[in-house]
Length: 296
Image 1 (spheres, one colour):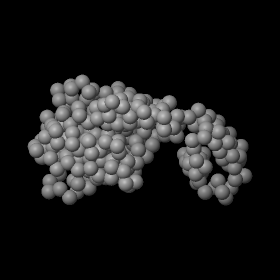
Image 2 (image 1 turned 120 degrees about the vertical axis):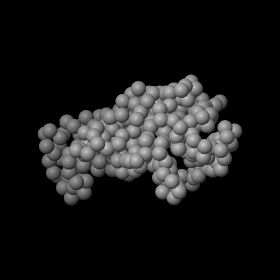
Image 3 (image 1 turned 60 degrees about the vertical axis):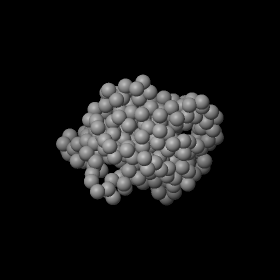
Image 4 (image 1 turned 90 degrees about the vertical axis):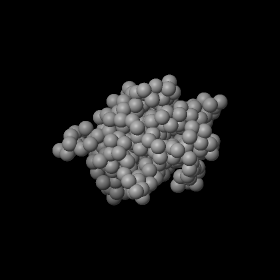
């Protein structure tokens, strides 16, 4: 198989699915060539007749077969990028989104301009641990915690960056623990409370929105981490705000990523639970995506 014939094979396989644009398929091709064939992606154009090694061909064919069945690229590769860091990912663990990077960026920006640094942060519904890990790496003096109901997610979150270098074992790491926030048990199970900051990207996609989502999300990513009932879209926000009112220090701050349809309602909900100075912020696409509040 030549480099050029592989790209044609990829375009044919993914083009039949009907949900990838040609630009996305080309991007996937570049990533597979670099990550699996270990070739610079520009060689797709400069060396299309280059023969791929026998040990590489079956790996590329397997990757295309999995993508052709609808499996997300991050699961095929076993990792995805978030805030400049490479995170281990697998089926059953939510793939981090760019919007969540904006949430982390906003939080770190607020800390940089604050009069004092936080000593403890909790990430609720941590998933792959991407938020908790980035905060821990950027704030090594801070104690960072993450919780989730999913055992699989907690296993993956705890294993991030294991063995990634000689300094990995000596660097501070987040502490992850299991908790079902909807049961009301978080207040009893929380480790390290009270916190200066609580951050959460909880499930917020309404069940009715499934009809506009791609099959590779619906068939592979965990429904538990994505969806809420149409008749109770603020389910997680209410429970988390209630817990945060008990777990935050006075003056502590709560950060949420939200469904763009409900950011105003989330801000009002925070006020109900004793939060002041509630604000909604737009993402880079101009959609109201983030809500913050300060505990009175």
